[in-house]
Length: 173
Image (tube, rainbow, N blue to C red; front, side):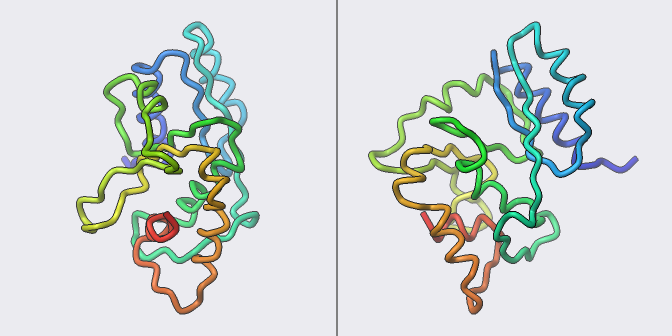
């Protein structure tokens, strides 16, 4: 049996909804049927959680290089999340994350003054941060024009992007 992207996402979603009360989750996707979201939301309604269908057409975005098999063009969507989701704070999680506790405290983390995001250090690339878990502060992301900074980096033709969007985000921030 082959594990699909939706299988991974379902595992992540189940772990989020199990541990995080009244969670509002956006699932960026190109083609997951609306009926699937309706069925999930029917199960979530009694606990006050909701799964939003965030349809994405990659043609609407600047997409950079992808050099690793486990990274695809879709990973660049996280650069655009503050444009796509109305929220003071956005907690981005890769679809292969297993949540083992309430995520609400992460949304309330105090970021260093003026910082636009919090990320964990990457254990594979020393000195870099991993974009698989990111807390984005909307106001500071906009204040520092980080989407524009990322797009500017993506458009540099002579730049070697080694780790997809993660390289871009590390350079911009």
